Image (cartoon, rainbow, N blue to C red; front, side, top):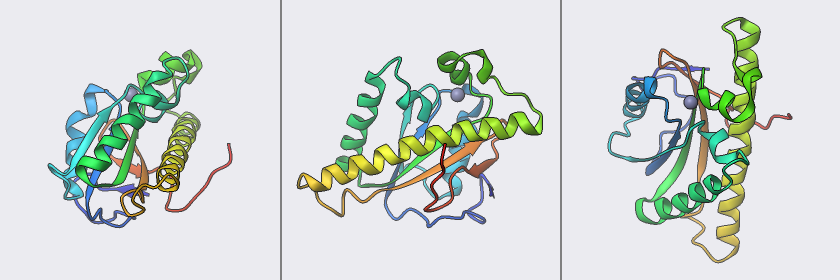
Length: 177
Ligand SMILES: [Zn+2]
């Protein structure tokens, strides 16, 4: 489903009640588009932003395993300092990190098939990070953390190079890869 980057209409998920942690790629073409998207959710000055090359892929890839630790250490601080209740994972098309980390075959064409394959790969990494975040929160609750603090929604998005955004994973869905 396409989401208007600036306007709150057609956003198929509940508006965040508290603050948000945004994970995005470092891609310089989309910095302004990401700000517009967040403002369209009434989140100006209401989100922490973590930037990892490749967004979810960056956090989950094994070459720099420390990046995963860094992400979750920052998530812990953000939840405690800023009442984060939603994590947004913002993937994007034509992401250079895919060829950097995975190889030249992960450069996708503009054909419908190339675009669909690209979307599937982003969905795969976003879902695996989403599941890791949900697991992390469950572990925090199990070890005595405040259950309200550690109930976090994870929303997964894909942005194209015009800044248009779609939901990568609809609410409550699970995909098999
Ligand atoms: Zn990228």
